[in-house]
Image 1 (cartoon, helix red, strand yellow):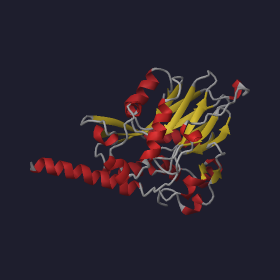
Image 2 (tube, rainbow, N blue to C red):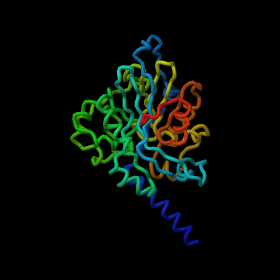
Image 3 (cartoon, rainbow, N blue to C red):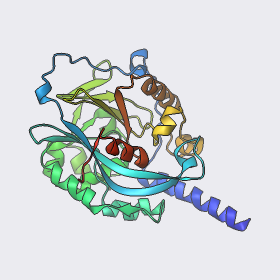
Image 4 (tube, one colour):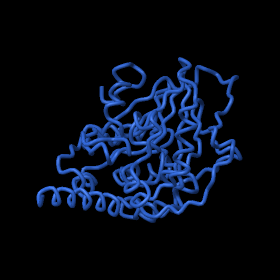
Length: 306
């Protein structure tokens, strides 16, 4: 019995550390979706020149850890779930790209992720890929303002951050991340953009940013239309599991409301909206290792390290 209590206590302490250190602070968002936003407003670009659209989307994994299923979803069990810490690369025919989120650093893994999972694996080649490709990137954008998605900025030089990084006003004004990962001097120089009245922003040919608050106040999703007419929707951390999304299963209350302080009403509205999209829209969450591997195996997205 003492062993069970000790294990349970360790799990709770790990979760508290995860929340406190990564900076999952209070959201207290009072935003309520309009009817238009809850349906997810996709822009109509029927006259877009196909030759300038992206050719593919790559996934690059920079660290791997394992969470108990009950932490990932309120319908999860005791089995471990493989969690990837990823960034994505939207590739254009002129050899430029858009980086979506950043690569976690070895410092971040040692200081943060190892407190949650002492068997977490850092993939140095993933970070190296991020550093190499940042130079050819049109933009570096962020699905939301949590440190596992932002921390890699610190590994770049200041001029790259100032010239490439782009945040929404909600993301830049957020208190979700400490200056340890984004120095104040950089934060004041990062470019911002404004969503239109439908909550969308046309970033580049074939790429539209869509405002999807819930996980954080500044959360957004990235809609990508490829030359082959495939549509990929990068949905960040709205869900940590594709299976949970299809079951409309929220993160457990302990994690979602008490620790991360998500807006669960907005998350459920988003899940309903995502699940109502046509099947030709490929939904891609950021952390679901098994599902991401399945997409790579099926040729839907590319392993950026091969």
